[in-house]
Image (cartoon, rainbow, N blue to C red; front, side, top):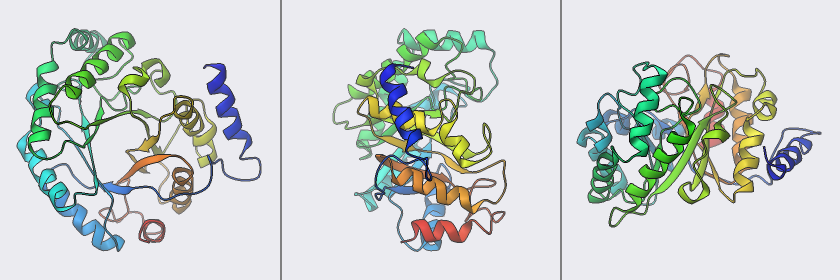
Length: 312
């Protein structure tokens, strides 16, 4: 960690001596929920809004990654969200984009490294060019794009650890290819898992020139048990905030919700308080079981807290 980043993280930690860590005064931030990828997800989001008591500010979906053609942007994913965007032109649309296929097949490290190196060499650029063109054609030219999310973990074939240098070069290719599409106004979100995970996410950062937002997915799960642990742990929420601030970048929280520790209203209160004290571009809660509170009925104590915090 650089001296500047260490000093910024230390300042955030010292600020919590009498209470929760924060990054400044509370402020409103755009809120949404992930309720499904395709047309069903759009319909469910409308029902979530009715339950919440107000419209959400953000729609969030994911491209599938079963085959390379999925990275082109299938119509069954893009078309319903394009209609949602036309109906709500002032809202944010966020799209997670895999950088490998098949993306959840448990590929060994040598195969992942080969994909990353081929991507760095430009072999897959045409998929991202097609995706960009399809997004612009559908009026989604202002999308926030999240390529290769949670690359510091083990879940996805677009993980970083097998070859961090190739991963960074590949991310740069993805961004430069999408930025070259006529009419685009995309923003790019580098989003990591909270904590160290399989590799330090700072080792995968591809550069300030290709990153507009620095995101962190932070579920109520280990590493750490208490919210203060999530803040202070190595490469946790405090270091995320400091890393972004040192680069003049805002932050996002594309995935968060309950997970390993059951129904926990305090997690929702602390997460809201944390996000409200950062320069948060958007926040999208995951709303299916076990993470959520509307489409998942397993968390009855947390549900009214979410309505209280976000239904205003």
